Amino acid sequence: MSKFIPLSIPNFEGNERKYVDDAIEQGWVSTGGAYITKLEEEMAKFLHTDNVCACQSGTSALHLSLIEAGVLPGDVVLVPPLTFIAAVNPVKYQFATPVFIDCDDSFCLDPQKLRTFCENECEFIGGVLYFNKMPVKAVIVVHVFGNLADMVAIMDIAKKYNLKVIEDSTEALGTRYTEGPLAGKFAGTIGDFGAFSFNGNKIITTGGGGAVTANDSAVVDHIRYLSTQAKNDVHYYIHNEVGYNYRMTNLQAALGVAQMEELPEFIERKRRNYDLYEKLFDGFELAKLVPFRSGTYSNKWFYSLEINRDRVSASMREIITSLEAVGVQTRAIWGLINEQIPYLEDTTYKIEKAPYYAERILNIPSSTQITEEEICYVAQKVKEVLEGFDNE
Ligand SMILES: *Cc1c(COP(=O)(O)O)cnc(C)c1O
Image (cartoon, rainbow, N blue to C red; front, side, top):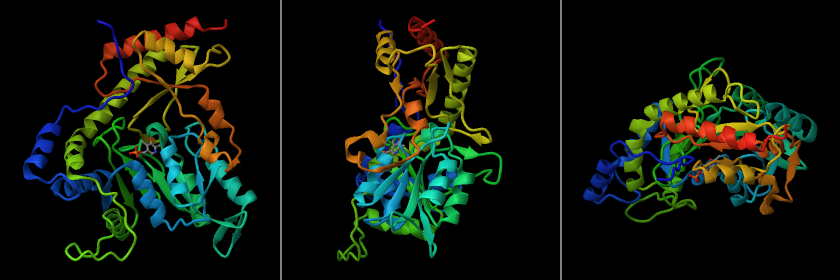
């Protein structure tokens, strides 16, 4: 039997089948039904927030956030270069202009560079920040791999320059501050908007799906309205705005309610497995496990190894292929978004760390059902492969 340890796969050990069967039994499979409301309530309770809207995807959650933030054609939105492209595409849906600001060592937005961009590259006139005469409306902050961005510093800058903060918390459900002025606050509930994803590789999944919250409960209600084709009257088809078909279905939500029941257990396993990897890679000279921000409790969704490029010059492709051959699925961090064809013309600001990490970070298996024995196997094989490429 040949070994295969996947990178990150969904876990359905709970009530998933029971609830999905129930939704089918009741005939409520589409964008209405009790599981949708239940999922929204459970998420709101978990995140200590008032109101959550369940929608079709993390991408639609981000798009609705931008619409609600008032981002219009010709506006500027500050975005990260090193993340999944879905965090940035909705800026283009609004015909707005992205400006890429570099990340720090957490892979999240660098607040220092955000500040110097606003101070040195923009003008602040009458309460509005302008870049090249275009109003800068919002900043999209991604909590990469479940790590928290430095929200204390970022919120301070956003407040100073009247920027709406959209937290892309698609990878950080359950991550929160434990220390400092934001202690107790969850990723996605600190800025103006928080977007979540329940895609198959995320910490919980509904197949495809997402959710959005906002610091103003009435805004979430309006997002829910927009997500259901802006229907003002259910029976007579009155629509006072242009809406979207972005609402989650009851079938997806049935899965989601079951997954929410297991979320605390999933987070515990992710954290325990991370600790084991940490022990196994301790003192290894060719790669080190990247830590999560101190003063936070992270969901530790994805684990990153930083490869020592002084010693290992093999390409990511060579490393990944060698590990695949011994049954260990890994992946490289993303290609930089500012280097993708639709974004080549867009402005970048001090992009230094993003390309540095792009050629050093390897993600290793992090599924919640991975066993200790498998983790030991992964660590051993990663070490063997990297030692095989050691220049010394
Ligand atoms: C997964 C993900 C998204 C998009 O979520 P979907 O549900 O797939 O639309 C957006 N941003 C980041 C950082 C993601 O990882």
